[in-house]
Length: 96
Image (cartoon, rainbow, N blue to C red; front, side, top):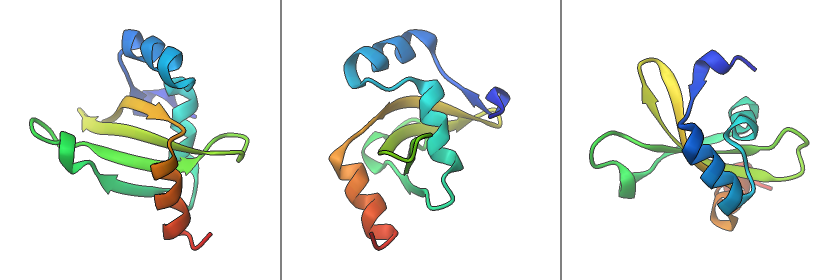
C-alpha cells in the first residue's frame, strides 16, 4: 500500500480508533477491494465533495465504510468504521 496516495489528520485518526475501532491505515484496504463501492456523501458535501468507500478489510472478515474526499491528488480519509448501513450497500451492489 502506497501511503503517498492517502492522507489524514493524525488526531482524527486517533479519535476514530477510540470511537469506531478502525485506524485510517487499516481503512485504506477498503480501496483495494475489487468489488468496492464508491458513493457520493450528499449530506456532508457542502464545502467539498465527500464520498463513501464500502470495501472489505485486509483479512476479508468485514466491510469497512470509509468517508473521504480528494485533495491535491490524494485520498483524504475523514472517518471509517464497520457500519451496518455500509455493509448493506456493499452486499446489495455485489448481490451477496
